[in-house]
Amino acid sequence: MPLSSAGTAVSKTPPAWRNWTGNQSARPHSVLTPGSAEEISAAVRRAAAQGLSVKAVGAGHSFTSIAVTDGVQIRPEGLTEVHALDRAAGTITVGSGMRLSDFNTLLTGYGLALTNMGDIAVQSLAGATSTGTHGTGRASGSLAAQIRGMEIVLADGEITTCSPTENAELFAGARVGLGALGIVTALTFGVEPSFLLEAREEPMRFDAVLADFDALCADNEHFEFYWFPHTDNCNVKRNNRIEGPAKPLSKARFLLDDELLSNGVFSLACRVGRAAPRTVPTIARLSSRALSARTYSDTSHKVFTSPRRVRFIEMEYALPRAAATEALTEVRAFVDAAGLPIGFPVEVRVAPADDLWMSTAYGRETAYIAVHLYKGTPHERYFTEVEKIMVAHGGRPHWGKMHTRDADYLADLYPRFADFTALRNRVDPERRFGNDYLRRVLGD
Image (cartoon, rainbow, N blue to C red):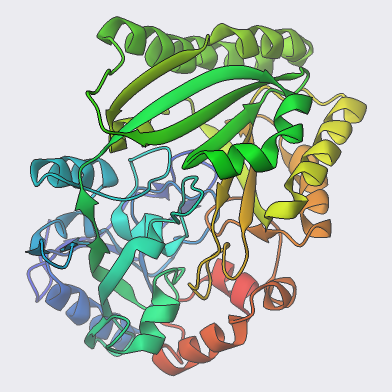
């Protein structure tokens, strides 16, 4: 494989790229795997001279076309070094291409942890933060809300740092930057000493969950639940800190619940349901009863995250938290009336209001409602009708998950939308980092 002038490996005839679920693809002009911000800077300048766009791609775990390009594709897996660790300040700075799973291992070795996480750990740090990836939390927000500083390569090739006190406007926009402002090369996260979480998971009836929704949100540090369509059954998860000692799942219980049932058996059930849609309601009833109540405790990231090997397509909307139960009731009424075979549970999480300009939780207490279908299952009608419900409640779509919203809609939902697009005009006036998705959601 030839090298660029900066030493970066370049693929002359790169193969087609596909995302994790296979619904997005691209055939870039060239693919670079840089090992430093300086190499990315040189690549951006070369692309500008050739009139090519530039897009970074992480683990490909977004369902939208946010990372698609026919220009220069940057794969940041070489950007994984530790730049700095400041225990007194409670921060660590690392390369943006590091995977969350590796970041967790690194932090554990230092006796440190993130305050909150999503439910998987396969994404790159830059990809997860740039799209607003989140978990669930009463008072702790998304991954991007834990960023304390950034290094980013702008469209003119300048390597810039930003924080609340340095280039503060860029920092306000770039934490959830959608890949529209530049290529993120390093991230400084706020971290804390390692802690234990106790997970309490149990079945609960749909009506009971909705009746107690506010109390469940208020009484638990991290609360979420899954409703199984075609049933009255939910699986409720409460995660709260404890002093210890840890009481992790036995290896046998983990293999049974998280590998065999949640991945192996569920994958088989999804394939059967896709081939024979009439079996889905029966499968849903069986699936909703398969996982029994359990309580365990472990290092925080082992409780926050779990293996997800069944491939699916997803749409998620962020609603004002006060609208969650009404919206869920409407989703259930639609599913019951439509008779669609929905084999995946509906996931519900919460987050506090934050101040990140393009965060789905900007300025309001938030509930997230996510709908999924098994890979290859027709999703259009289900997603379209659920999206109508979400939009009617002022929903903001997750940037990395399926939706049909455009700039006209989104400008009314984000109070700092005009500030973000003005910032984009300033730092990338030629749209070096643009693509069709960004033209749709941000305008041009």
